Amino acid sequence: VALPLPLFCMEMRVESAAGAPGAVRRSSSSDNMLPPASRGGHAMRPVQPGTGSLSSRGPVPPPMRKGSSFRDGAQKVTLSESIRNNGKVVEEFQAQIERKGRELQDALDQLSKKDHDHQAVTAEMNDKLNAKGKEADELREKERASEMTIRGLEEEIRLLRKQHNEIDKAWRRSEDKAPLREPTPKEGANRPPPAAEGPPSDRLASELKALKKHLAGTEAELAEARGRLEKERTEADKQRRLAEGGAAAREQVGALTGKLKECEGKLKEALGRVQKVEEERKAMSGQLAEARQEVESMKAREAGREEEERRRKE
Image (cartoon, rainbow, N blue to C red; front, side):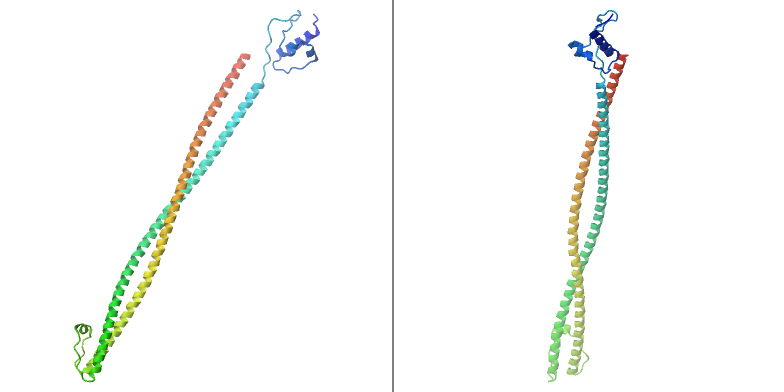
């Protein structure tokens, strides 16, 4: 039976849509001859071969589109890449944290070593300063004793000179045969033992000679004592300067101790920040694990849905 041209073109269009799902529809000049409903995309009922009438099987389902599945695949790939990239970022961040932690630990070890050395040097300096302080105290005691000795010698020299003057006066009076006065108990105690009995002039001359000799010895002893005192004063000044330098060193040690404590505080603060970053990293790792589980569940659901669609098609 010969069909009209519009119906023949419509049959070809319906068969191509039903026979090749998803095939690209080629436009034809005969589409302009179809009714508006046919150009709108609604499938028409096919014509029964040999009868020239439309079948009663109902509307033909539209072809399945795979664009959405392609988009889903692209989204899955993008999400996987994003997860991998996030994992790499987290691993790099974790490596940086570990490196910073090792550097901080090394700095802490060096700081502890320097603190130990600093304490050892401080203890040694304190011991030396204490020893020098004791030596300075001993030298001060010796200086005071030497000063007392010098004062005693000066007093003795003064008395000897006074006695010498008296003996000289008596010797001059002896020329006139004047009797000598008796010496006082103090003068008698300081006077050297009398010489052998003889004329008064000879006796006075011998006493004067002995007194001059004793005075010369006393002056020599005084000079020696003054030399020792000067030496002890020089040593005491040296020890005093060392003690002052030790006080300055103690001040420097105190300043260094303050700086050391400040560095320890900064280091503790840095370790606190590292611990905080480590906690944040652990939280991010947990979130990343949850995201991976969610992606795996999404993949499983997608695979199940594809399997169900495949079975439905079969």
